[in-house]
Image (cartoon, rainbow, N blue to C red; front, top):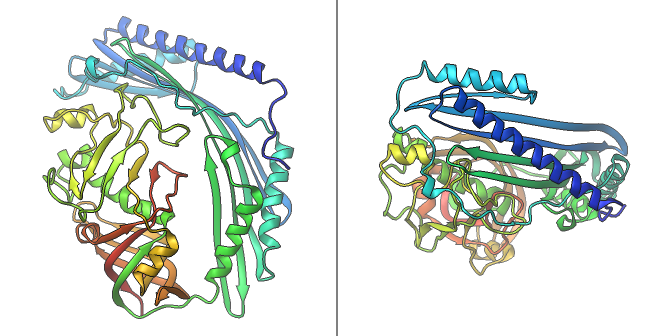
Length: 457
């Protein structure tokens, strides 16, 4: 089944989309007007509506078909420096007015906070860029089932050691979000998200292993083929058969790109404004100091076309921009929304709702080149558990992967733990690979650490 199946009436779909956008925008105007009538000095609201379906096939049979139609509205009002918020999934006039009244009532009982309030008007986005985020995949359930079957069949036929399957899934989603506030800002974003995934189980002698693979993106035409997704899942599963423990050792550790992004996620958690003003970060008061090795450059690139994290404005309407967060290993900027910026006596960085397309500059080595450069050490392909303390930086996570000797994979490894402190781990980054994983909001190649503790037997 081709992934290029499209609607026979694209113009009608586009017209319906524009009509739906107008309805949400009218609701936004109504919410803000209702808040003003309720006595609020200022207010903001976000409204979203989405729909799609997900189907899973297991062992050639349809296991689930789930259709979803979601909608949500949240309103925040300000009475001076007092704040109240309320939300609803009922878009009837009576329900919306009840929600606004609830927010106003809450505000009257909250304490004053001089940092509360809308983002400063001069920081709001004045241009809404077309970031090419909306690519509806007009397939029906029957077509999606055929794609999922093709994916799973490719995995099960890849090797006779593939004995079982956890299933193959095809998902397509489309949503619209509107944000508006009483500074006169209103922004509308329509975006899609599609994926194909597969997970299978392999057996050989006394060993049983599972692994998976997936492809995801805004545009269904950019997805890997169903056959390739299935074969990659099977190849990764077969590679893990016969995994053993290793003895506890300090050695180089190479994080494969899909798991390397977790290191950057821990970093962002530590430089987020809410952690900083609460003094709950191991990177407190480190602005302008070297945090990483001097070859590391980390930036935010919110205007990439089709990317998962792309946006013209943040969750407060503040304009986003490309900026450097780490330059030559030095922490150049925090990650702040309006409230945390005011708490820290700083300026918002346009990060209400998080970072958007975090990017670590890749080096010249591809994945195989990194393995050869490491020579001997642990290749991590999956992490287990969440043993990370962002207050102290202590790090301890279960890991699965491969033991490398003389630049070659020697055998698969399981039941080990990678441990250390993130302060040290960041400074021991030797290389970032050119094998950038662009499927998520953190765009990252494989990361090679000079050393870390690997706890085994």
